[in-house]
Image (cartoon, rainbow, N blue to C red; front, side, top):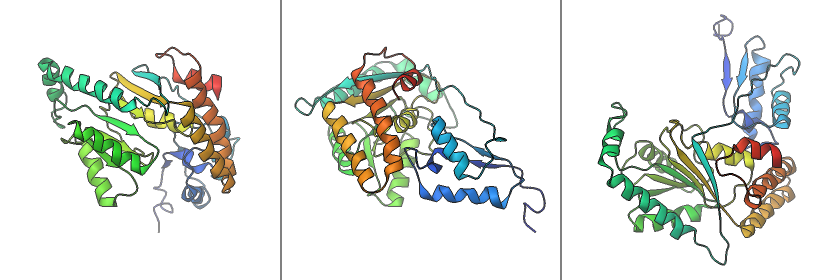
Length: 298
């Protein structure tokens, strides 16, 4: 007799539910098989959780899961996080100053921490169960390609910035080791330079910044990735480097995906890319609510 037959299976929870929808920014075909839970255990309540599901995606998730839209309840929380500062910095292929600016910014942060012993002492005492390096500045830099992970992390290390690359080209053991060292704030692993493969399911509280080295392919993807900053409710920075050339490159990749048969996902990403692009071309208050930008331009 199974747990279900005994009446002891009380709830089924599915996280990252946006992966179920073909319209989502991170569609994963294997997630479609989760509809088995609805048919196999019809009396067990199912909760589907995600930080990024627009109305069409919510409808698609419910349909794919075989749930009854009439009896399904939707609980929608605000996406506002007042401790996150959003910033767009313009660049171009002709005058690419991203690295020099980033290096200068990081060096100033480390210098400020080194010259503030009171703050270092405060950090070391914040959580006795998870002793942190007082000089650790935890962050994530998202890049488009594996080669960029290796190149950028290497350049940062040459300037004594603890950075490590994370991408699918590494073995599973190497990725796990890199991830665990970053979570533990091990020396040399303050910053993870990663493709979008990094971050799902990871809850590191003290991430002080998330940088997008280039334009993300979708607004939902950006919100997921930027949202990994500041989960301790302290101030954190979310920065996008924006160039019109990069916008065109991302648009080309989405069009290529559509040409390869992934038209539903590519169509959703195309509309979402227009949303991200409009942030880079429309003056906004850097402290404004990112959800408001989403609603205006998506």
